[in-house]
Image (cartoon, rainbow, N blue to C red; front, side, top):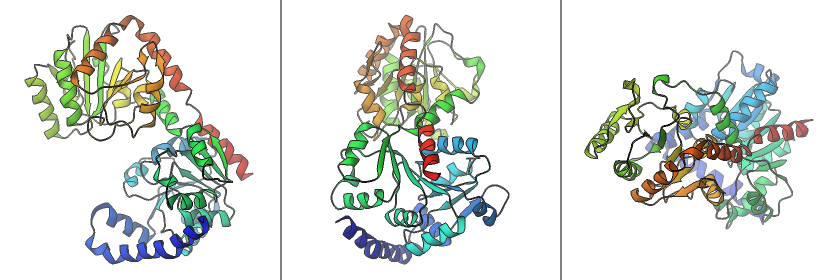
Length: 430
């Protein structure tokens, strides 16, 4: 059945989709049109001195990451380059959103649009770059690509793979295509035992390992190599600091009333909105003023009075701000889906999330873990819930160093997935 579905995909669905996208391209805009044009042009960019021939001669490591999956590939890229400084790395993407991220990755030598999932284009791409191995990040394994790579005996691994019970890749006809694709990969490195069991349901003959989530390695690397913050604003040890990170208006409508009702003596709060546009910051300032909350903007102040809110109007420093804090709320969870809880947990913080957190594995997993602080992740549904949990944690202020260390120790168990994946790849490549 898997072979039949693959033939249907390869000889009917892909050619039809390709034809329709070419036909409709002039009428499309935005990222869809950009994606089509990148693939059509065979777009690539060499970031370091050299030519295609130089890269091909050195036989690069090929990493494919659809878009946001590049975050899982970051520590793999960095560690591989540390181990093999003379081997180029080429990264392919599916969504043009990845370009901005790739532009900033200094260890990537070449990045390119993944060709259409058609035999002749993939064969041409492989002939051009001559990769020594391919690593698929997270989920984005294309059936024809997997088949072509296997036929050419190029070692292949899927890492940080996750397959939830309700995954569409494990249902209907799609599960047969998933099975066909994954059976053409040498190894699959899953995030959890649950993922491994869900894959076994497919009846794969590929080797499957539980190696963890490489994103944790990236989070810990960031904490160990922090960006500079304004030292004059560092809170004192006796001040309790609450942080609301990556918030949207729906989150702020809960957080601000909660903070307004709290006694804020010996307490400070940070609000780091997801969007730092002038219009949104001004709206937030009005909300806080109307609620009677004193505040200062991060970029404009040299003082942060006790009892006031630090409004963060600068992007890229949230992970560092978690290290200043004692408890966190993670934004998006009153809007549609929660942002990552990893950074706050890795900093040792008990975490609150709103009702929309089912998209996040860690938010679900760590609700089941009980420590000195109670559950590491707790769900809130109202401003009253937020206020109660903050008050409860403030009463444990003398226990905070122990609580934080306990959480950091638990989250630290997720380290070194990157090393496990690369060690396995080295054995495959020998």
